[in-house]
Every structure is written in C-alpha cells, then in structure tokens.
Image (cartoon, rainbow, N blue to C red):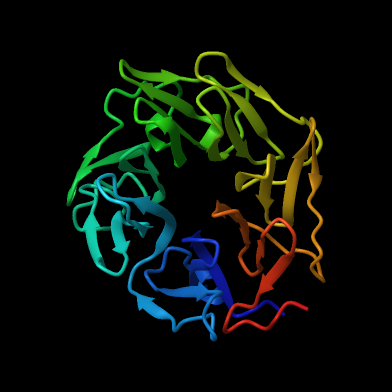
Length: 319
C-alpha cells in the first residue's frame, strides 16, 4: 500500500536542516498542480526534529537556497506553479508574483506552469512552460529573460523549460523538453543543438568548462557552450535522471528507483548501508559537507561516513 503523503519539493538549508513540501497522494495523482501543500521543516539538532506542518494555499514546485548579495544571510526561496515566489527566513515570510507567469493566475499570459528557481550570481532566475525564463531585478521586480531567444524548431514556444543554471550571470544555461537547450551570454542566446531529443531535467555546474546535463533514458551530457556536449556512460542505465550533485568528488544522480553515481565512464547504482536501501530519489542536495537524497517517499542524509534515513511524519516508516 502506498503511503498517504508524497513529497512535492525539497531543499536543504544546512547539514542539519531540511525543508520539504508534501501533498496528499490521491490529490497529487488526480491533480498534481492542486494549490494545496504542507511545508515541513526537519532540524536534526532539535529533540523533536520534525516541526509542525504549515498549510500553504499554493503549489510549490521548486525550492532553493538564496544568499543575499549584500550581507551574510541565507534563506529559503520557493517557487509556485503559477509564478508566486515565497521568501522564508526569520526576517522574511513574504511573497512576490512574477508578472505574466503561470497558467491560470489572474495576470498569467497562459504560457504554462513554472518549473524551477535558482540563484545564479546575485540574482534569482526562474523557468517554466512555454519557454518562460525570468530574472529578479530587485524587490517585487521580475523581468522576462527569454526575449530574443531563437525559435530553433517547430512549436518551439510550447517547449517546457525544466531547469536554469550557470557558473555566473554572463553564462546562463536553460534546458527542457525535446532536448532543448540554450546558452545566454552577453551578446544573446545560442541554441546548443544537443545530440538528443530526450527530455532534459537538470543542469549541474561543476565549473565554467564542465557543465553536466541529465535527463530521461539514462541521459548524461558533459561539456560547455564553446566545446559542445558529449554523452557520458551511454547505455549504462535507462533510468530517468531527475537531479544530480557532486559530493566528495563523485557525481550522484537521482532516479525514481533510487540513487546512482558515476564511476569512470559508467553509471552504477549507489549502495548505502540503509535497510532496505533507498527506495526512490528525486532531489539531491549537497550543503555543509552533507549529501541529502529526497525521493517522493524516502529521505536520507549522508555525512561521508554514515547514512541516516528520516521518517516523514504522516507516512509509515520505511523498514
């Protein structure tokens, strides 16, 4: 029997603190963008690690850490499917709306739901359906960042962007449906013309010359906008890789069946000391020397020596 709750999004704040949003599984199956999430924090340093759930009347689909460019302060930022952006911290607790973003919001241009939010350099970037791409210029000031993007293929304006990332603000990558990928530099957009038509899920920036892109059917690409991208470990796995991160020099990849890692030119299943082993993985986050693996149901953290499973309140423990 499936657990009653499913994890919708997640982000680690530190080596001890994790934030997840959860939905009722039945609701998620019938209407995955239903505006009803619970936000729950886990703090390993507290006697009772799981805090009380807070109901949010919106659908949070992506979260990220955000560090203020002008002060040493980090908070969590959440993106909702309709383009609302929440800022969460001891001094925060406010929302903004990306003008025109979303599908059914009052001001939506109808291009589609949003997908992901990230901090690149000093600013926040968000992407979504209909090739939506936005940049935050200041408080309550978001602007379209997709203007001037080439068409490239039939029905290009219907393409869903799944992720945006880059080593700095003059080198931005965005990827998504049908193998679509662009690079944005000071002089405009470049269609990367990747050697695939698969759905691309996430971008990991190792450095300016080494950019990783993962996707469906075991796809893993490495390269950059100058030298091009080449497939890594072709044929080693047919998993849909959903996210990835480097930890202790090794690239880890998340799939719905569990955690994988790159060994040389092969992708292999990452084995843990957990019993049973990781049931699923969706998000990988690395911060303060800790690897977090969060699936739709299963949550674990690895400090380099020991694996630890976290039991989500409301769901039966995984044993």
